[in-house]
Length: 448
Image 1 (tube, rainbow, N blue to C red):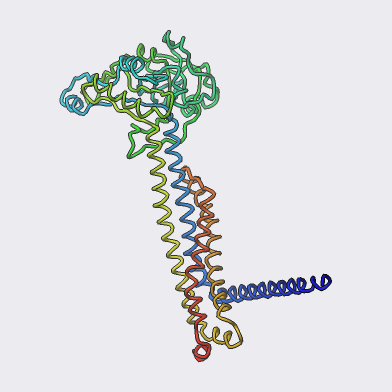
Image 2 (image 1 turned 135 degrees about the horizontal axis):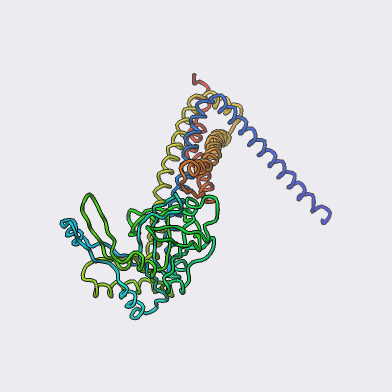
């Protein structure tokens, strides 16, 4: 008995191997027939494939552009600091109307040094408070000049605002206390004012005062401006930082403006206060406490509060919605491509009715007919999917190269796009294949 037991096992293996070979041969034959049929109608097949190509390409490219735009926005918000609360001085609308009606007027509004003291003394869970005063003026070096945003602030500013120093250093507390004429400039303006040599140790001029350059900041990411979020304004390309005490001594608190014979002036002690909270969980509570405190001591709405953490959460939700919208639009284009495949396959079934009848008469089963037409459908969608993925990867690089717009191709977008294209080929090929398989062989042979 034991000597006879291996024989059935060997016979089963032989039968299984034969069935596998037969299935592979049928698949190979169906593939060959499908390619031959598509090649006979090359132009029609190409036009059908293009629908899938552009559908897959649009899925990848649109998601890459949307991902890049969202990433830029989130990077800018992260640069503001997830644990920070930013308070900015804003011009009251009522006072603005008065200023427009008078030729000479000194408008007094905005944040005060007393606000900094109140926040430090009365608001719990606050680690650092950094005030800043902002002036817009030309910065000169020799004959070169740059229109620059000049910020008078404290030594803690780069830590709170995630600004890194690429050369030199930021100014120290002792330099701030003594009001020295030192400055730190942005990499963008350093390239313009000092195109050949290093700016460290050199002097730049603002109005009639000279400032020694002691540091250079790293370049900023491409700036953006949100249409829906209170980010105030676009991040300036050219930036220069000086000690706050130096800014008060050199520029004072009154900024004069002369326009077509009229004169107006604004008195703003501080343009911005950045508050760092120890725990991100406390950011919302601290921001509400600051808002309540400012409402008591500011009779008019001459400030705004920006919470980067809340903006980041909104940006993430906007990104999800944006991806869904873009994905839906691209999916519609794939759907149109699938309908094109179904249309072509139905036309092919009608044209090849006699061929189907001959194959059925020669012994082909319904399953063989279904497989044949499904293979053609999958070849069309698969080829379109591969070409669409390649084109979809290329387009974002071209967009970045020609428009300087950031694009990000995620790993899952080409995979999902190709998978959908293959599924479209199967789904939209089932009905034509089934219709071909259900033909009566006798009626098919009579078809002219």
